[in-house]
Image (cartoon, rainbow, N blue to C red):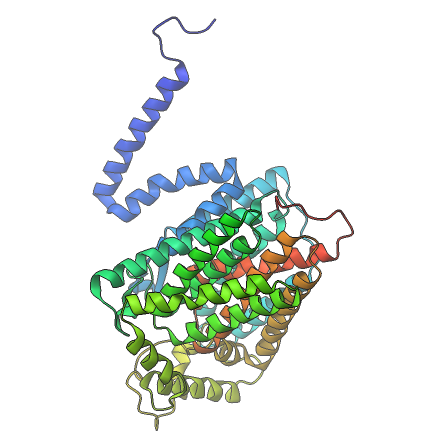
Length: 469
């Protein structure tokens, strides 16, 4: 028999008691341990429950948190943690492993991308073993591994589930639009200058390089969704959002972002033109030109021209610092040609290899090499560098094939967006290094997974993919 009239069901009473207990626990823990740790101890179990109920939903929630996470430094351990993104990733992977052990999981597909990633992992471990500080290598390899497992391996295994890939693109696009509005609102209140562009993502982004890369990824996702939209009004709304995100990228005054923007848009324009989508190309050109109206609105044209002019100026202090760091990396690989100085060991080795004749302003500062390519070369030697180039060329080639041989308009649009996002990272990576930064590497690995999935579909003899992908 059910409960008598006026009585509450047992589950309602138990749920209310649980909520009260959770509230009391959060207050007590926050008072004893501070807000960050206290909230984390209370919230993470709830997130773990969500992971247990639905791993795809938990994955999308974590992706949405990426741009709005903040960095918590641990000086004693010489490390940092992006909150709440990285704790969520760790919990997600732990629950995923437990579910796989209990219920089984998808078999890992054979993939040339997975094979070259395995080679890169082995070379990173070997370089770390011979480094002067293996602990740094272990920490960096673990961080890279869990970001790759979350951003690449999970979508690779679950991307075939109906709607997952498009939902992931939508979440990334919306997160980027939110970050763009946040940054533009900052400039609207504080004015525009070359140096304020470096601050527009604070406190969520440490500097404009990271902000502009994430926005570039978001722009690729926005374009992918817009080009695959069924209805014209959704396409125009998407193009309008692309203008907004592009304006945020331009006003960040990150010089690498300008080169990356040109490269990613060139990929989209080229493949649209090859497919005969001339009207779409013209529409995108017109919409891109409207970014100039936003630049005029923020009175940023003078600062923009000055910033662009410094890209090729050898005497610019930022350029000089990059050259100095690159020369140090070259000196490292000359001494350690096969496996470099050790994965994640560039910063410690820098002082032994810097070029003293280049008296740059930051020559005494402990910082990265300002290039992903020189980082790999110096830390993993020519073997690691060769494997890395093989990986990049392979993914680029698969992306081009996925566009040219796509079996549906949706797949083609997603492949164009994924390749545009991948290419913008290739350009950014020439002038900056992002290491194990979750803000950048989660969407990067997702685009690699998306390209791999869409490429594999061109080889699948099954029925054409529907729009629900």
